[in-house]
Length: 372
Image (cartoon, rainbow, N blue to C red):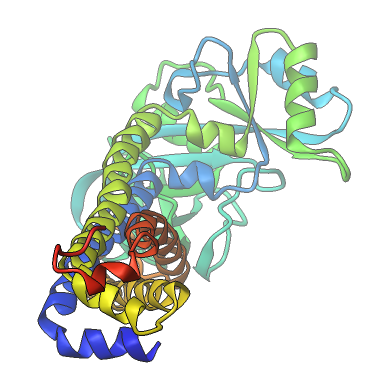
């Protein structure tokens, strides 16, 4: 420990630059992860944070909530499947609304107030109790979707009063209103007055105690024709665009996770070569190889920890500029990312450790130099 810290103190610039480079790279990892989470929530937050553990689509919809309808006989058949406590209609549609004195687009989710499909992240107000009430996304409070605001579906459609707000319930990057299914039907009818029946887009399922979502999905798919049952997470992961966004970010994050340990490992390997003569002399006067290896590993840990602290500071500052995406500073991702990067850095530093272990103390007594 003393040997490691002494060397770092005498070479502040060298180790400081490395810590800064590591900090910048770790910051980029954290920032990309935060952006990914924020974008996914903006795309499918409403699905992710509603109470139905199982959602049932038409089997031709390809997991697209906008492209599915559930027929009345299918809804009834789902309710007869063993292990299903109740099934209720879930409607979804994008509407032109007037909110905050301006015309804008909003997504309306209609669910049966006594059934599944209610938002689960309520932070203020209450859930709807009757037709014409709704819970809105907290991100859009300033745009006419705050508690007490009245939103009108165009043209000249139903009025919806916001009685609560919930976090992370946007859908397709649009404001969201969770309301009674009857309100959703009225909104649909105002847009298409000639429609005789407004069908739900999906079925929201409540399970009996002891029945897992996966088991319920198997039973529904086996017993009901023309439908595709999905767990809540499957519905989220299968939503159009989500998988491609995650794949793109996975490639970027994978490259960052590769670069950080490579930079660290290469740095310490080069330093080991540069100070090979000094290390050989230490071995010649009695220093154990394990002592030198421990000093090297201590330096790796210090550099990575300092870099993580720098990264967290940059991360906390940068998040302030993208709060409109619902991105927040969370400690757990920072700790997990720092731990993963540290383990990878220790792994790549084994190349430098190998060079240290190969030092021959007898080389210090020759004039031919040091072989590493």
